Structure formats: C-alpha cells, structure tokens
Length: 495
Ligand code: NAD
Image (tube, rainbow, N blue to C red; front, side, top):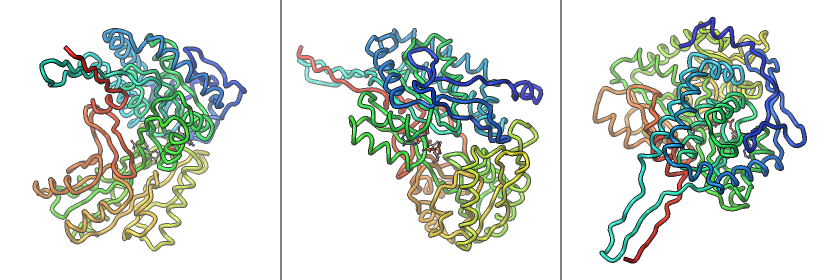
C-alpha cells in the first residue's frame, strides 16, 4: 500500500536527463540526441531521455557480447547469480513506491494498480527466476548401454528485449529475469513513451552487483534504435512485446539479418462471455468493467469484447453501464480516482477516432465516448460502452487499447464460441457460467492463451501468458519462459 502523503512527497521530484546504460556506464547518445518526456497527467515535460542511434545500439550489443564471452555472468556459479537476482528483487521491493510513482508520471496508470502490477510484479518475477537457477536441470537420455547421452541447457548469448509503454517494469522483468537466469546478456529497449522506471531498474541491477555489460539499456525511437536491434547480426534473440505491426517488422528484420530467434507478445481483442446462467450478474458486471477499463483499457489482456446471452442482454448492459459510470477518472496519482490518464496524446486521439468510427458504423453508444479534464493539459477519457456491435465492425475486429468496450449478443453456446474466436487474436478470454461442464467446454473451445472462469484477469508468475494466432508466440512467465532463452545441446558419448 501507498498513502497519499507518500505519493505527494514523490510526485514532483526532479528527474535529471536520462542517459543510455552501456557496459555499466551511463552515457549520452553518441550524437547527443534526446527525446522530451511528457507526462500524460498534465501534458508537461518532466525530463528527457537519450535517443540512441544505430551506432549506440552497436556499442551496446558489443558490450553485451563481450560480457557474455568473458563469462562474467554466463559462467558465474549458480549461487552467485541467484544471490544477485534476489538482491535485485529486494531493491525493487525497497524502492517500490518511488518506482511506482515514477512510472505513473511517465505513462498515467492509476497508482493503486501500478504499485501492485509494476514493482510488486517485477520483484516477484526476479525472485521466481532467481529460484529457478539451481533447480532446473539438464537431462540424461535413456540410451543403449554403450552410450551416455547428456542434454545440456546453455545460455544463447545476447538477448534483445523490446518492450511497450504499458506496464514497462512488469513486462520488462518478464523478459530480463528469465534471460538473465539462463545466463544470457541483455540489451533492453524500453518504449520511448515510458522508459523512466526501467532506467531506474537498470540502476538497481548495477547496485545489486550485476556485472557491467550484462544489462545494457538503449532508449530512443523504435524506428531507429528498435530497427537497429532487429537488424543486428550479433543479437541472438529478440523478445518483444508490443503491437502486431512492429511484430511483423521484426520478422522481416530477422529474415534480412541473422535469422535471430523471435518471441512476439502482441495485441488482443479478448472475449468475455456472459451466460444467462452466471451465478452473480452484478459481480460479473463489476469485474467485466474492471477487466476493460483499468489502466484506461491499455492492457494487452483487456476484455474488450463482451458477448452476452440474449436472455440477459439488456439487463446486463444496464448493470455494466452502472459500473462504468461509478468509475472515477482523473489524476492517476490521486488515490480517490479509479482510472488514470491515457498514456499519450496520440493514443487518446486514436481512441476517440475509434469512437467516431463505431458511431458511423451503426454501433449503439451506451455511455462515455468523450475526452475528460482537457483543461488539465492531460489525456483522460470516459469509460465507453458500445452495444449491438456486429462481427464485421471495426470495433469488433481491431484492438483499441483504450477504454472502449464492444458488447454483442449471442443466442447459444455454439454462437458464443464462434464469436469468441471470430478475430485474428487469441490472447485472453473469460466465461461466466454456473455450469461446470459448460465452463470446461468453453475453456477447450476458445482459442486463447488464457481463459478465465467466473473472473477476469489475475495470474501468477508460475503460469504462462502465451498468445495464440496473431497475438503472438512463445510465453512470458513460468518455467516455460526460461526455455526460450536456452539452447539445448546434446553430448553423445561412446562408453
Ligand atoms: P509498439 O509496437 O508501438 O512499440 C513497442 C516497442 O517496439 C517500443 O519499445 C517501440 O519503441 C518499439 N518499436 C517501434 N517500432 C519499432 C521498429 N520498427 N523496430 C523495432 N522496434 C520498434 O507497441 P506499444 O504501442 O508500445 O504497445 C502497445 C501494444 O502492445 C498493444 O498492441 C498491446 O496489446 C501490446 N501488448 C501486448 C502484451 C502481451 O503480453 N501480449 C502486453 C502488453 C502490451
């Protein structure tokens, strides 16, 4: 928990201009370029970050490669690596309030959510993978008597992690922690729209004793620094979270360069299916509203399509509207507010454009749709519900990544499954029903990486988040994520 007094003591703290971290040293971009950091809370500049060039990326990759080949980290005894990763987790926890407020000033997430989802989650992720270091073994394969077959797990080398502006600490930790636990060196590129908390995390990693060059941080524009990473011939893996468009580009870059391994965690248009036999419709409406509107809908697993059985359609929309209208939107650093700011002006404009298109396509606006608190200079928007959204509409098919939900009726379970699976995405889903067999059938039939039953959201570090279809490949979290950052090497020994 964090109190309003603690928040207020941190909210105006000066933030010095931020630099790149290369080989354990903070430094400016080689050409001195910078990007202004504008807070979505009030539209004011709070500091600058360095805008790395392709040349900076090259130096950072060399630094990662050199540290890897020297074995400073890759060959350190497991207990040494565990100790440092636990120390990183301890320092994240000790600095949780500062990290959370810093992140909120950068991207507008409501503080009550940020404190749990950002430092809270990142510390847990570092601990989970720290513990895995001396508990995950190689294998001895069954063979004939005259052969010994050993399967070694080896670090791959240099991992490039490219992450988005929503939940940067949490998602950054989902990449960095398993990559480090497996013994790799890392070049991290935060989003130009939210780099500050990850830069502070890098500081913490140094303080915890991570050797220089094992974690390098390159800030700057995706089209410059991100592209240079995608095309780099000495990066072995890119672990990416972000939009489908950038994911596609990374596939092209890999094909044009060294065919590097790619893990893509992309967008979603996740269905939240409400059956008439759900036990508690009020609870379903309350959790569904949070499932789409928290962090202003800027959540990859947001339940952005609510499918409702016809028999309770009008009644459920009314309950959902009541819940949406209860949510207080405003300054994300005021604990009295439930929902904070939209991350950037450009994102807010995109969200409002979706509203205009939905109206033009004939969807029924139930509530919301407007910008809020424009006089503050910040970027705020009402929780917005559209009903009667048909599968061919833009709002049914495309990710808004804003506080806008599409509600669609269905007649029976078969139609519910067809609608749930009727987009290019497959990230998350939920089903509300009191029938056990129906719940299991829906889990089996919906094509998505997670299906919640009688809840929305929530997960632990020990379960994977793995998109299907165009929501991506690979999995963040759990021991399965560790495997992404390892090579399997067989030693076939004649005895
Ligand atoms: P984005 O694709 O615009 O940016 C993500 C990162 O890629 C940033 O660091 C950016 O600088 C970089 N980038 C941009 N252009 C690049 C290029 N040409 N080459 C290399 N890197 C480049 O995405 P965003 O707007 O920051 O994030 C929102 C998206 O992320 C949404 O689609 C959301 O659903 C998705 N997301 C997915 C998950 C998941 O786990 N599946 C989690 C969070 C967010």
